[in-house]
Image (cartoon, rainbow, N blue to C red):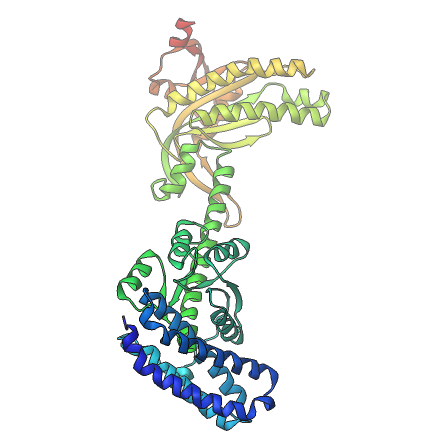
Length: 492
């Protein structure tokens, strides 16, 4: 880091340039328009502050803070001088020439003794692509805030300022910010603490932070970068270099915001999928669909599944005797209970057909106990009819009875429909056979096929056996009445 002894010789050039400017401006001050005259007075005032800082340098116990203060003053002188050159180079050439010497001498003094020199004034012709945003400039020095605001607003940016660390955090809580320019040395909460708090806050950590400081200590620079700063500029900053760094920060913020937007959209889509698909299948199946879709083989494939079909007996007659609102209330109560039971046994609800339910055990996820779960599900569904009818009775609604058919066989599973509308389902001979078996049930019955019975591991209490001729099958189909789970029956 350049110390005070290294800066002082070069500061003599600044003071000589400043003396020449005072002499030139004193001849024409009253003729200069009000706004540039105010800037000229600020520049001369900054020069006086520099003289005071240099005069007291030997008594200063904190050279780091003193260097920071000197760099602030040099930055103010350079900034006001550059604005004044634009305003006065045509109407007041002698003053403009003196101002150029101030700019050049400040550039020399501020870069003295440092291996990290900022581009000199000649580089100010470098063009940067237009990309604007909201910039928060945090600096306890009023001149620095004023100059940064003017530089950035001329480039189309919206500028918010803060004079302290606490004020900076309050500004961040008030409005969205795209990039922060942060001074390190400030009374109270310094820039390092502001940076730490920002990076700990999930809502603020994505905001790019460009530290602007008169401190050129390499360890301090590394510490800031490791703490989360995106860039580091030395005071007095070069306006074009600042614009380039801000542009890079804005691009990073735009990319982050775009990624965040996509992430939120994906989260909304996932929630929608979970909420929608979760109405028909278990949470476990939804999780598998989202986490390992390639393992579910949702394209058409042949697999062995156990199918369950249930139907309310005489439901058409019941509907004719009740007003529509009561029919729908009764039906939705019934379907709601049955849906919970089916999903609880990891079944996939393929279809509601009026009062009928068609569920699949074994697709899209196949398990060894598909048949067991389907039969136990059927038993629980029949048991639940007791509570459903108790509730119907309290509301003055008729009692319901339900028949259930269960069958196991190979079917084609996959997405059925078109590009615009499709559903996951099964097709094949055994789908029709399941419907035929269910059609032979009476209220309270559970009929299963011999193919399902062969796969059962759970002990069941069987009732009578019956055979039926089914369309499309030459031999009679054997069906078995399931009365209960034998283990549960014996324990009861």
